[in-house]
Length: 370
Image (tube, rainbow, N blue to C red; front, side):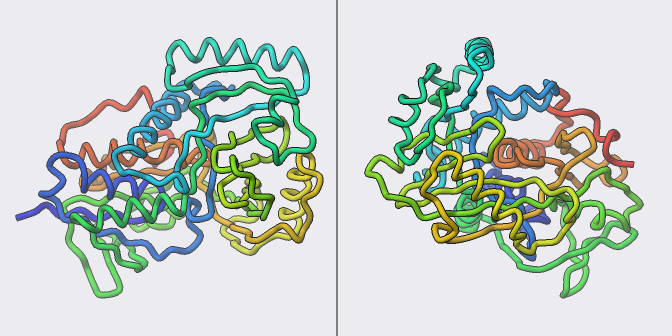
């Protein structure tokens, strides 16, 4: 009889776990059911840049997770045959206006490359060279080019991973589920029995596990981005993504689409309403680099809710009081980079068992769960 696994949450962690439960050796002996009601999910509203190597965050565990997460995505793109509309290594340009800051960033890149060869080639670019790489810009700045950087469409990635898993062993149910005080999973059709449960509901984790007597140090953060219609250069599909100093990310996709974002709103909680002030903030940031953009160029606005912990670090692993359950949350703005690796680790431990040591990637779960 096949083992039965439930996944609660169809965002980047849940979809990645479902994919790996269907594709890792031994996954065919597992029946997977994913529950997701679909409201507010950060991944569906996300498009981003995969380029963690030049981050100056001091949390070395986060850096190891993000660095290995970027490598995981490179492998996943090949194995899942992801289209370039979903994931593409276009390279990343990180700009600085101060010459010393630019030099320091280049030195950091060279140092990080020693332990992260997936960064690829590293080049210093003048403003003119940056414009040659991204012709959409009217006000380019000098920067550092990292060829291993990539752009990713979170919504499209999740859809593709779930579609591939559904061809093997996954059933998706668009339902909201809860737990009772004994840890039983309750769906709209009644109690459900599973051998294991992966809980990957982002900032909704606290509410979901409250009946289990567990409190979680996690909070919601609203994020908003805009899509704009821009001139469709022949080279646009291969243009590098831009991480400008002090401004929002500038992400060219193919077919005349540009994404700018995202905002970080700590006061809005779970409010998914488009905020005009945030839209204007994003547009103003975009016009710093492409002065021809106006409100009329905006074709779509997306809003999602991220999960953050007090120290901005993600956590994942098995619940001590409920060892059949595994949780993951707190990925913040780096979810598209770290989520696939976390999903693979959770899927792997369900298939192969054991008690893996993930301390190189995260602090103890007791820092966040009580």
